[in-house]
Image (tube, rainbow over all chains, first blue to last red; front, side):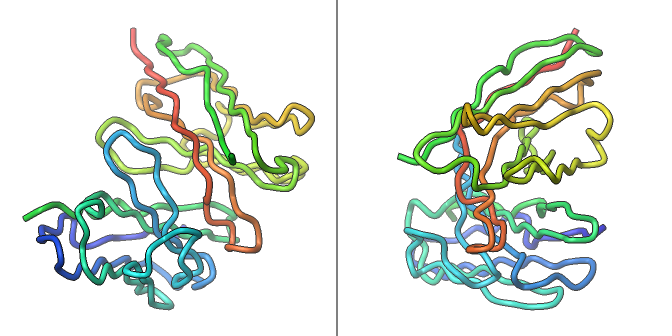
Length: 110
Length: 121
């Protein structure tokens, strides 16, 4: 079973700064099945990125995803006030066919 | 509007049972795989179970296997989670989520608002 590790646990930044979030898998993951979600307090998660690098519908282009194999990155080019939230990576494994979430990275205001 | 609305959460004693429902609207429910994801208070997301569009394929996390049963009724645009032998560690907000099929590699593109399940004596 693939384990996802996210770093850092918390990222303290100011609006306008660049955020770089890491997701590392315990074994190689198909890039097609790597997604990123944003969750704000009291809200359901929201899909940001699928297929490691494709933005979901309505997601601003300041959000970008990259990576392959075991190392994936979510980048927020310039933080807006509404971007302070928790971010989760997720992978879909076909054998066994299960979904796994990383523990999350909290981006908070410095 | 594409929407998922969960219901059925509440307080239940350890060893008890609960059935969650998720009502879908605004899309062709029968065309999509569906999922349950939970989040314990102050914790991260945990995938619980998946069911394919025609119920042919069903999968569970090891933590709930043998105790939870996922099902769906495409005629009623509804997803269900029957939870038996509940434990304190099942306490969480339970979300239903749509998997967006091959167009976005089964990522979860639509989520409900969640329903809280509390297992406590």
